[in-house]
Length: 423
Image (cartoon, rainbow, N blue to C red; front, top):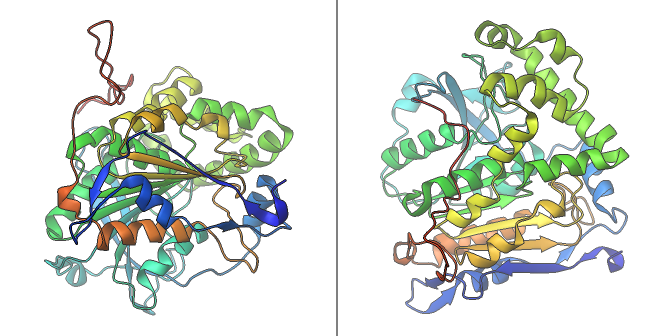
């Protein structure tokens, strides 16, 4: 046990981290920026392991009061058609909509028509965890320092389909490799806010999606930097980790399975209308992997849930990232287990740095007094990149990472997918 809640912090990175130039012309690198952004990690000593940290998230608290206005976007992908909801952080308001999460209302057509801007404020695009949304406390804790008390950031949250009281219009829920909606929104944001540097952050399943997206975009990624928090990385390994222990299976997997069943129930009319999902089979689901077997495999055409997990995992995508990228994980995370962390991939890609803490649980990191540690490195890193680093000078080499000395003439594509989603 770490002494009195003091967590050990380690970094995994390439031998030669990505060189960076500060706006004053001095030189640094990605590892130095990350090390400066990560403060000491002092957890609540009463929550001395990952289970206690993670379970404590069930304690109800209000958290930071973040206000949103929502816009529904029509998807431009011919196959992955339908709609998705994006919540924009706005000043305090009182016109809440009872159908939406707390402190959230829809944009009026007139309001949204004037949303475009040529300002140069940094803008953060966030992705939440499994069955969550913009209302999640861990997410609000992370973005509050950027937008409250004079914060200069613009922030929005891309909600997964069906989450955060959004509607499902084509029978397709989100999945772990569904990068289409965030890709469309980033393109839209680049057009509407041409002078804003765009950044990304993802949490848990959203971290897996963000990592996949950044890897798929490679050197052409419109984001200037991105962060992945509590990423499960290798979904098959994480799934086996959940099923290996009683707590993993009977608590975490069961809770996540039940949350997804509730989500399915909210949208069953549309899902059953457009898919061949067996409703009775879904009703008999107990665990997360059973839900994926009953819904994701049928919806997407995967033969097994393990094939889905392997295809959707983001561990290989690390190799294709060509923007400054920080991952933050707790080694005692009982959901995104440490065995799934791709240390070797971080060690060969200079664009990436992995920060691990010995304590923290899953999206938890509770400190004495109820505060959380993870907003500190997130906000410190984002502010450093936005204010101190010359983002236009960041090199984006397209060549494969590694030493380049190979016996055979081979082609390894880290983001090639087995499932081909046709237009």
